[in-house]
Image (cartoon, rainbow, N blue to C red; front, side):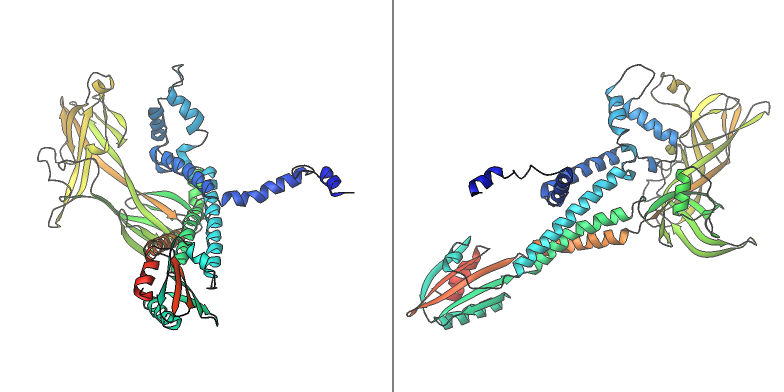
Length: 515
């Protein structure tokens, strides 16, 4: 059979392949696709979009009140299933937010998959960088043609009346004084070749820079609750003792199940304090007793917490003790306990002119009805103060609880833009309205600590450190490489020099060749 007949009977590359071969060929192309810059950029863009959505939209794991959380989404997207109108907000919620679980995006498998894809892509690119660097640094052969040197982006050539040995000595001395790594070769005809380079560590730094992203991403994946990390919340009142944070406690809380630990170690709240500092407020309003320019939170939440071993005889052996503040967590057995917020419960008693009494209990952020008077009221975070007042010189004094009560009836009816102020209730001074006394009996404050176990944090820190060092070296240590050829021609030396920066050939010409 002739070659022509062979070519006629030959099948195109895409014919004669079974399904398995086609799938296998596609699989082999996946690494090529994932190591491209465009793939990494698109994954990064998608991740950035989801991260932005998770930052803007309220997230499920950051709320303690499911009803309040649901109301936030109803308000954001104007959801009203009973009005018979399909609004744009409802379309976005039902077709985008809910299917993609943007209300818990950081805990979805989709987000974890995107992080994994970006990690793999970064790792493949980093290994490619290793191969390129190894190939670059393996070039140690200085002998090339003059035309090759002249074709370099920054090159110059000429001739000088001198001896090649003397010129070569000047070249070596100059290169040594400028800390170049030199590879040289000569022949019997009087030609010398020099391959020079400097700051090779820049390429090592660039490799570290690429791998730093891998470390940061892998650290984030390892710390995810679907892999090796977990988190949850512990709510403690003064004198309360709760189990330590654990994966089992986190899972039980998500499933709303009772959790019984298999260890005697407990978390115990000795004392909780609200600190109001004069350095953060102009002073105290003499009429209301509230700090001036008060925006609804003290300067600091401080929880005096102990880790105790709860003995069966009732004694507690203190294993660790710390004042937990914002950004100053308690760390025990690899778990960090962070001060996040506080939940306050208020107990009021209303006394009628005839001596009849009724009580009501409410929490901050809730509407309630004052009994007997039948006034609708409510407390926002800005309506309550109490704790410790710290003056500029550091002196501390007790600040009694003061509660601001409003009448919300006209406001809820749309008759007023602002709630009507009823007055202030103090711990020792009741508020009197139409001969009805409203007394503050007690305030129960519960500190909310978030516990986090994240074994990926050291890897993330290492990646961040590597990223800073690698980026600094890569930016401030430019890669320098060049070639020099010296050829004896009678009583003259023909020379050619070229490098990857513009000043190289000029410096060789003026400082070394001395034309």
